[in-house]
Image (cartoon, rainbow, N blue to C red; front, top):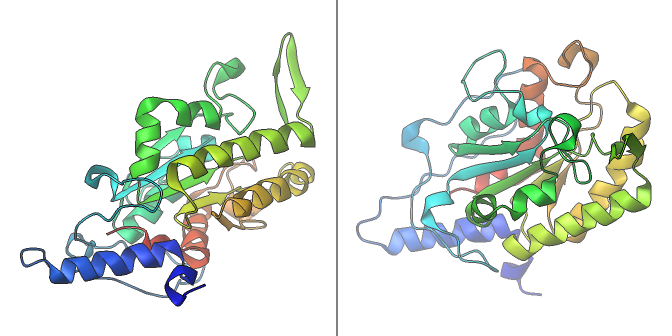
Length: 269
């Protein structure tokens, strides 16, 4: 294996973008901002407009990336994504919005409360599960084009809708659904460390956390994606009263963990 091929795909894309930009006469130079992650108790400083990465779009290895979406941080998720907003500094600003601010990206979310790899979202399972969400043409296009894709969820896959009520989701059923979804994403993005998967879990329902997390982690890594471990991050002090969803401190902590444990800063140009 060559030194080049052994580098993470995010860094390869960044290097090519910088080289191409340097050779182009009319393209402004690329500014790359690298900084170490601050402690969990600190806020993340957003990237100013002048510090955002510029330069031509580079083809993803297994699919052509359109210029339109290259600076997009796309999130597929559940209510831990969907119930929060994109208002900088707001009490209910989502982790994904804080993350996008910190890397100079534009966030776009497709999230439904109750959704998961197995479970369809919205009340009484009238929405989409993650696979059905990505199968929608507009979402599929964004998945291919996005500089980074964040997949947040799995907590809702403890049970799912059946006629007359709900049924428990077995490990075997969850594995099939998770592996099928990850293959679906692999077909669109290739082996890609800018596809980031996380399973935030508050202090409620920890017995299912320990059952579900290893299944998602294994399937993520099998396809060459980045799994960010958030176990123990959403504590009672960082959660809302329901002990499920993060509060402001929890959302900040999630965004900081993603920055510290992934190549998120190198996924946009």
